[in-house]
Length: 66
Ligand SMILES: [Zn+2]
Image (tube, rainbow, N blue to C red):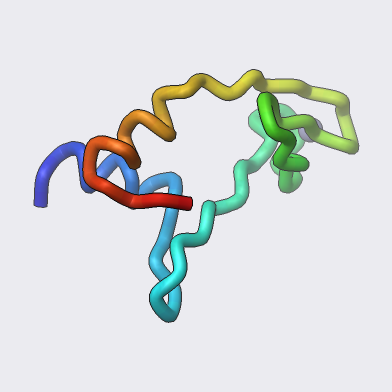
């Protein structure tokens, strides 16, 4: 398995033929974060993390479309 594929597996999992994004956990309080188009936010402590486009670039690189 390539390093690229491994990094994808940390973010997504394949379930019955569908690609599902693994939920992001808030690093401050450990709760699930809300997934917005350009960022993740924690509804509990308001922690916000902006998305980088690298996820999509990795997926494009191995030909997965979400
Ligand atoms: Zn939080």
